[in-house]
Amino acid sequence: ARFGLSVAEVQEVLAIAVGGREAGLVYQGDRRFDILVRLPDGLRNDPDALATLPIPLAEGRTVPLGEVATIRFAEGPNQISRENGKRRIVVQANVRGRDIGSFVAEAQEKLAAQVAVPAGYWVTWGGQFENLIAARDRLMIVVPACFALIFLLLYSALGSARDAVLVFSGVPLALTGGILALYLRGMPFSISAAVGMIALSGIAVLNGLVMLSFIRQLRLKGMDLDQAVREGAMTRLRPVLMTALVASLGFVPMALSTSVGAEVQRPIATVVIGGLITATLLTLIVLPALYRRFAAPIQPSEANLAEGRVS
Image 1 (spheres, helix red, strand yellow):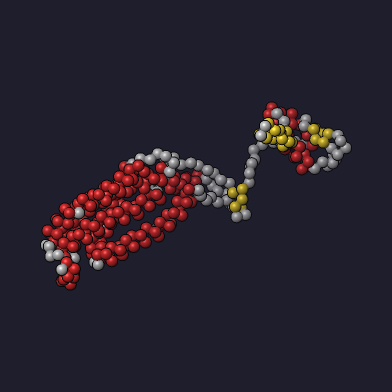
Image 2 (cartoon, rainbow, N blue to C red):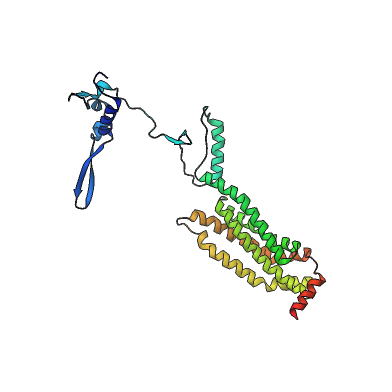
């Protein structure tokens, strides 16, 4: 105050000397370069040199910075971020070699045991983990709705709840194969893997429907149950294998991908390929046996309707 200086004036001179300020432009052909005025690196990191920095006064005189300020180096926040009116500091980390869900769960456990958060502070987890939680909540609604819709479509196509359940039994074994494939490849369960399971369920149900529909047609024509099961399994062997092979071979490049986006492609492809292996075995071996054991009897009205269509 005795020198007629304000804090802002002193800080402005120091900011120019340490941080620099644009003072003009230099043109070289069609390129432009900023002229930056600041002290050399050696002086900017020397407190004694900064203490001699001249601060201009109103009378045209100068006063050394050391006469009006105490110069020392100290750590402090380089940026203060706010969210919803509250101060926020972000700690970032990249997770490699494991899934985000288990990493955050372990971090939360250790944070609660080893860190005492002061009053007025709280910890939230965001980033990809936040997206994972949001996607998981949506899948908790989408997946059951998808399975319910598949069952309704099967019931409308077959006209029998028992036969619809038999075809739908291919879904659990297909999902088991997908989970086993993830385990064998050392991949964690992720949202992309869940999407692959939804696609896998559709393919498994399709193969089962192809097999069961043909067996029912043979029974409607008057064929014995055992003979219809045998004939249907043998006749539909090739279509079922072709459907499974086309779908699984089409996902092989995705399963082996290492390019950008492979972290999304590999889980989907792994689930589909592994699940199709077990689902195909179920369709060709287990489903005919289940149908022979739990098949609903053919009603006379259905047989007469089938005969009318044939004639």
